[in-house]
Image (tube, rainbow, N blue to C red):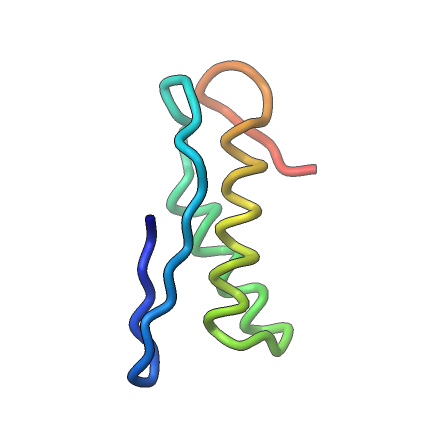
Length: 70
């Protein structure tokens, strides 16, 4: 569970735990997805949800430590 505290409100973003050893670059993928969506005019909570969804796609992509987003 990830939690965002923004403008006096608490937003929770959850997703199931995925099997495997994880991917390299997950922090960069998440922060880039959030920033890109804020730049497109999304609210911060909405951008965080989109970033979380993008991260889940990234974590499920391919085998090994490197992932990709399609």
